[in-house]
Each structure stands twice: as structure tokens, then as C-alpha cells.
Image 1: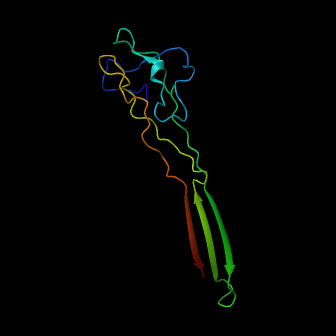
Image 2: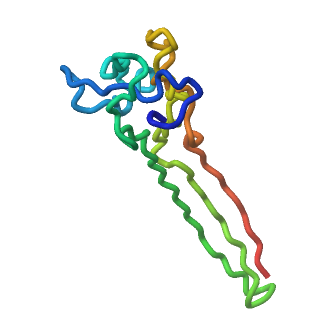
Image 3: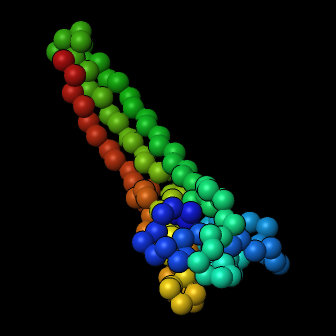
Length: 140
């Protein structure tokens, strides 16, 4: 995200500023404004490299819990090994939204030093919503 080599050599790395609400530069769980852009400033003069360290910003985490339940039913009339298995599989059982990383925020500021409007915005999720799948499996 930030701190990577950008195509604009003027604003490669911004300054991380200390201010009210800037103890953490991210808003966990807020996809509209995940990165607190008010906590960053353009270096002065604009040709300087900012003080933001490498890997300073951490993207949203991933929480995914899958569950499977099955029942084996051996049918001895057909064969000793004949088995009809009933399955229920639940994916993302907690239905937790797992946000994708924010948009490319290497260029949080344009070449004039103004903030880019969509910097810090999360537009998608990484995993699908909760799903349930039922199945019958015949084993012989």
C-alpha cells in the first residue's frame, strides 16, 4: 500500500502526522474510510521523502469459519461396505464480512499536493457471504 515505489517521484511517501485520532492510521471495520487520510501530509518541500515507515499500515484481517456435519448410514442388505453419507457443509458460518485491502493508495496525494478523493476506500470483500451446502454421497 503506502511506502511502495509510485510512478510519481514527487510524492512517493507521505508524512505521518501526530494529531487527535491519529494514534492508529487505520479505521478497522470502516470500509468507507479505512485509512485515515487526515493523518497524512505532503512532505515540505514536495520533493522530500516522507517519514512513513515501511509496512506501517496493516490491511483488514480475515476471519473465516467453515463447519461440516455428516452422518454415515451403512446398508448391510446391499453390502457390508455400502454407505450412504448425508452431509451438511456451512461456509463462513459467522457470515463475517472480510474486506479486501483498500484501493491503490500509493498516490494518496496528486502532483499538486491535494488529497485524492477515493484514497483509503474499500470497494470489495475477499470472501463470499455465508453459504450452506447439502449433499448425499454414496460409497461402495
